[in-house]
Image (cartoon, rainbow, N blue to C red; front, side, top):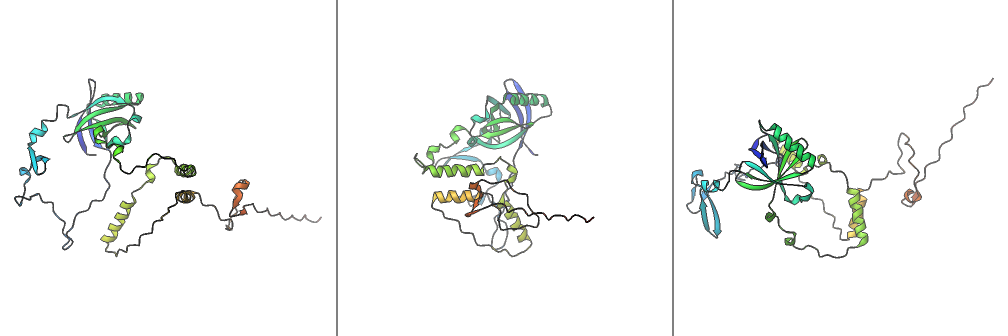
Length: 303
């Protein structure tokens, strides 16, 4: 893995030299903008609209627009001076419980590994955090950007999630068209809870896949092979206006499909446990087991 940052974790007077690696990777398929007429990829051109010339990198600086069309300019060393001496340090400010942090605060996850000389201190911090069940809230500067971070134990590794500052989280009160507090239909509420119960399962991340990415890769392969692409018509979406009917249909959709009583198989199946009268009625007929066949008597040999 590529090292994205190198520094040290600081808590109290203890320093733990670490390297940082990205814990996630973008699997999105990147595409280029193409000139449809000739098929050439478009180039990114740094052009000044006032001078109508292409701009070299050494002629570029950063600026802040404080009024429409008015900017203040900054030199590189002016911005670098804003980083204090701890810019290469993950400074732990507090230790808290993970359950106290709402997931809305989390941004990106990194792995932290000990540097060549930091193995003992790294193990000490990791064991202490594991035993206490706490996570560290820290400050870090990555690529000249200051961030809050949460450091926690992940298996046998320290991980770090950058988190938003509180003023970067938009309040829920800004969300438009939220429903006012009102009483809900008890039957609909019961059905909704039943649907949630039927869809509840342990979290297994491996069963979730990016269907769009798989379809796009397949489409790319067909395109490269020069095959003709036929676009199937989109399936019409069900427009169920009755909420109760939608809940009922959703519950029926996740129910296990019962076996067809008229279907015969080559091998006899084991008799299912006896059902109650409420369970045995399917489509108005009782699902009673068929009577067992009598065995033929074996004739005795004559003496």
